[in-house]
Length: 130
Image (cartoon, rainbow, N blue to C red; front, side, top):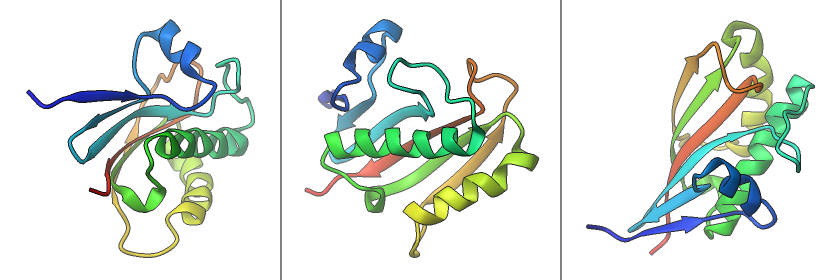
């Protein structure tokens, strides 16, 4: 069995402990990042949608940094949206700031009806440098 190393961003370990999951798992040269939402420091949802999306990407960046990775290392993205038709333009604005140059990672967007008080979530798989 491949070794699994849990990765946590600085200052947010308690939120993951409360919910009993890891921010990311490193297995070999792959990093599997749990869904990141636009949560404030206390774990509550950011109510402003554009700010919530930016915060989700910021939280993702913190997990990537903790693993020694960047957005350039991401190979697969899955996003979850409570109202995809009305939200996707906002998500694309933020996405363009972090994935500015091709080749872009794979991307799957899924419409959902519940995200525990959030309206957007992003999870990724990244390949880590050897």
